[in-house]
Amino acid sequence: MQKVNEIFGFLSPKQLTTLDNKTLREKASTLRNLYRDDLDKDELSVEIESFKYTVVAFENKNLVLFNSHLESMLRGANARKMQLRKIFKEILASPDDTTAIFGGDLNSRDKELTQLGGLPAGIEDLWIACGSRRESEYTFDLTLNDNLIMDGQPRCRFDRIYVRHSSPRQLEPTYFGLIGLERLHPQGCFPSDHWGILSRFEVE
Image (cartoon, rainbow, N blue to C red):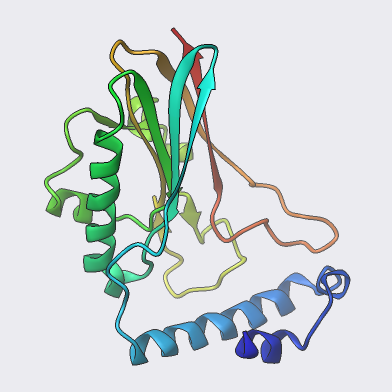
């Protein structure tokens, strides 16, 4: 927190909204570099700090909603795979009469999922289930999003939604898309350096 305060100079929320996009990017880049320096000094955590879930009922259908933010960056791959394996186990342990939905910033690479043996049987990737539309593939796309400046302008499908359907099946995914694609005004930046993800379901 001390480093954050040094970079942003104890600005109030109102003052932060007056910063132009270029200044915000510069400050965020400085903070990101400091974060990477700290990671070089400390071992990456292997266990998930926390993943949240909520059990709800909708039109007499039971749902459990999982959310988490997995380890980031390439050097976090081994920790991230262990985290994802743990969450898949929790999803599959949900009661048979319950639809389990898991989504978040997973920082996932397809090759890491392949190294885990692919998706466990019974779990669907909603981007694929909804047609694998190219316009909704890259949730981290620095060719379009200039909140963050990196060499090579990487494009990645970091943010994902997975579902394990109930038995009998109660929900049918009908749409997967991106949100947060428009710049905020007057700041001129996007809401995040990642696009948001949105999915829709029909109740069966």
